[in-house]
Every structure is written in C-alpha cells, then in structure tokens.
Length: 261
Image 1 (tube, rainbow, N blue to C red):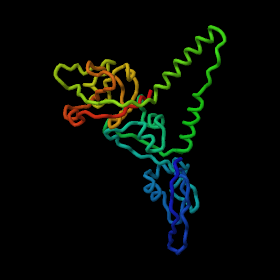
Image 2 (cartoon, helix red, strand yellow):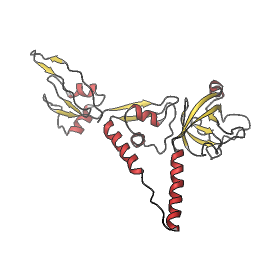
Image 3 (cartoon, one colour):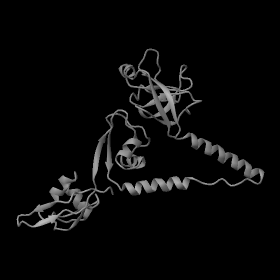
Image 4 (cartoon, rainbow, N blue to C red):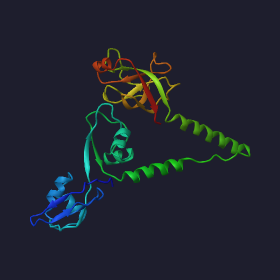
C-alpha cells in the first residue's frame, strides 16, 4: 500500500498523557487514546461499516495501540487532456489497476467521467512493471536451417514493430469536428463520432503513424489513430474535437505524438 507520511506529533489526552504518532503504511492505522471508529473513518475518507468489515470487528469498540486496516479510495474526475497513463502515474498505480476498478474495457476516457482510484503499494507496482519488461526481452537464437531462418525473420519483424511502439514524432496538428455539413461522422476505421462526440481520435498518414494505433498527443491526451484525410500527408495530424469552437480554439500547433502501441 502507498505509504502515508505522518509527522511526529504529540497529543495530550484528558490525563495529560503524551502519545507520539507512529508512521505506518496507508493500510494500517494504530489506534490512539481517545480515538473512535467514527473519527478514523472520517479522517481516512471511508465509513465505519467498511472499517468493521475489513477488520472483522463485531462492535465499534477499539483500544489504544490496536492496528486498524484501512483501504483508501478517491474519486478522480477526468479533465480535458487527461489519459489513463497520466492518471495512473500521478496516483502511483497502473493503467490495468484503474481499468479493473472501473470496469473499463479500453483506455478511452471522456471529460467529466469519474474514476475510482485506490491507494496501492507503488513500489510493488513499479517492480511488477519492471519484471514484465524484463520478461519480454528475449534473445533471438542463431538460425541454422531454413525453418529456423524463417522463424528468425518473423522474430525480427516483430522486434521492428515493437521498436515503433514508443516512438515520438514531431507533427503539425489541426483540429476538426464531425458536426459539419456533408460529414458522415464515421471515421476510416468505422468509429461513429456523432454518437461518441467526446472520443479522442486523430486522422493520420498511415505511412507515418499506423492506422488503429494508440497514441499520446501533446496537449490533447491519449487517442486512437482512427481516421485518415486527403490533406493529411507526412507529419500532419487532425484532431477530433466535439465542437467547431473547440477546433477554432486549437488552431494549428506543433506538437509531439508518441506511439503507445
């Protein structure tokens, strides 16, 4: 669990007894003289019922130095430009954690959406990520016969595809809206933007950014490269925004695009 840093302090009880606060993990709280379950629940943004359930308490009676397990959870409201990866980093959790807690099937989020985020052990999350990265790195054996040569070629192609993931490109970015005269509102990959006005989609040159890939656009957030355009050639992209005014506000900018996968 993510560690809470509690500054050393002293609390005077009704008997003028001095009790120092103890630095514990966010999952644990040491009961002090004068504490009640209601006070602890209010301090940690949870409920008495949840504390009793987590600690198998049959009543609200607690005693000094008793350890109470606490699961902290916050509600995060998605802002313009947010992405799951940014939110995960900010709260020291993983994208998969957020998707699991909120029953998300994709990484797409919309402005105003509320996400439940629990405190977890950032060190364990980081270690898990590092272990997964290490496990994905494998040596390609030297091919000695035609069958092995073919396998090596496939592995090399896969490696090239992986190298493209994570690549950052400088582009010129303009913006468009699907709500225009003569516009079908359906992208080259079949996304209906009229039905999903807040979905983050960009039009790309497939020779530069693979169509259907997931990207992160500076100043725009995480998006899908889900459309093309006659004027979108080379290092140019066109961002989908909900309204014409949003498109005018964006104008033309030089931004960086990172291909996530």
